[in-house]
Image (cartoon, rainbow, N blue to C red):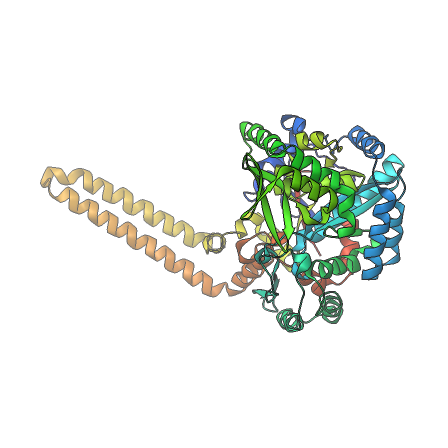
Length: 562
């Protein structure tokens, strides 16, 4: 029996991965998808093979109890963090539910379910919303099952500087054609962290362009107005992202944290000092765990360089720190170990963690019992258990985010009627469409073509066999004739397919429309289409719908009809 939202683990892959009558969702085993790492399947269905690399099995209630105990026993600056969050929320005019949730983090008895993502324009792809909703649902469930106060937190990665990764937004237009809108690079883009990039007046033109590409709906005015409220001239990119996410999910108690906030850096200065005081240790631990992952058939996500520090130096640009025999090198500048350690202790705002240290910093600031990663994050987090131990910070459980494709009823009917597995829609050639059209040909035509091919082959083969008795040189000519006849029959078959295409133009349009929803530009929907596209199409009620219907079962991708 397929899994449902009442459980967190699943007995095995679903027997059927296609919709059945009356269902608004159906599951697909993630192991069927080439774009999802095999590690995600093993983590969900065979945890024992990788479990020692993580802090516990998220499908085991006892593991949650132990995670709660570890998080509440670890001393943190809860009151200070609550004040920092309150100041951020005041600046962003956060909803009351989000402010109340942040205030509860001052209590040492409160714990958190955390997720995070880069600050991407217009909210990023659908998976950003899925991450946040997974965190909210897990926090609610943990609070109910373990009788503890649990707050969902979204960590905005605000110190990354790869502008190209965050600058664009893709939607489907009124004709269901993918359209990408890109924000003009602010001064410093590509060098400065996104938290320091200011939007200028061109952002208004970009939103105008987005509105023109979206199909007009009852929710367009609301969607565009909400975007303009968050993404406006003078706002930095990370705060705009935080405002947008908070406006959508703050009413559900989601606490949004802008990680570049200088007020939080002194709370983790000791971690920066420890990293610089044991140069290369973090990289070595992560590299060893990566090698262990590789030995189990899972390529590591991160391959640290031996001379790499897990910190960046923030000197305007975000510059990598490399260790040398005599100290450290920051760009072209050489600094002694004592000098850099003293700087980290006195001026922690000058430093930023890289991917190997960011999670430890995060879980030092928040009482995290569970982090919600994507499939790639699951891989690099599997390299960090020793790093957590090195810094004395308890590692949380990892519960992979819900993964889903949202389709409309027309696409659902199309998939059901023709029994198409959704992955068959990914290739951007016409192979799947041709196969579908061919399957719709009258049986008499298919049988006649097949009979003709078999008859020609059988008859010519006999002729090829007897030719040598008359003239051995004619055998080659007979084989050539057979090849030409088979080629002509294949050509006739192709012409039949083309005729079917013209006749079945409606089927072609249905296929193309479903393909655009499921695999826009050939990529999984949740990694491609912007949150703004779905809100424009379905309105804010989509959030309530997903909170009600998005299952938390490990190892399954859900196709949900909206």
